[in-house]
Image (cartoon, rainbow, N blue to C red; front, side, top):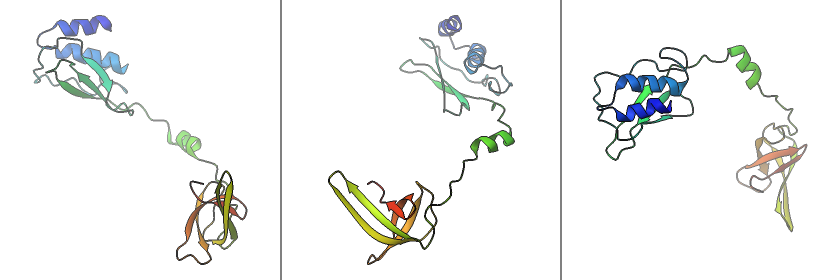
Length: 165
């Protein structure tokens, strides 16, 4: 690939066919194949000669387009769309992505002890759960004397902590 890039930098104006081939090499797939460029670079483009080797990067982590850039001060930048690679079958995605739902340790209407604290001090208050929550999930707790419910994180049965404490 290095020799191809060196050849690219020596051409004037920039040879689009060589850029097409370099994009295929960068993507790891031929044009039209999954993972490769969708189509050749538009031949109507007139890119100025690049004094150094063009740089190839992915536009995003999704690998949906290649960015080809001339790093010269007055260089150019083009985008080459890439054909999506075949997706994992839906059945495999559902099995892999289906998280195990934990049983709630706090149920709506349960009495809850809210706790907050740090090294050297602890504060607690009694309240009533306004929703079901598994360990680590957030829930609203109605605290006696407070106008609005507070948000808490379920810890264990009958016990929750304030976020950030």
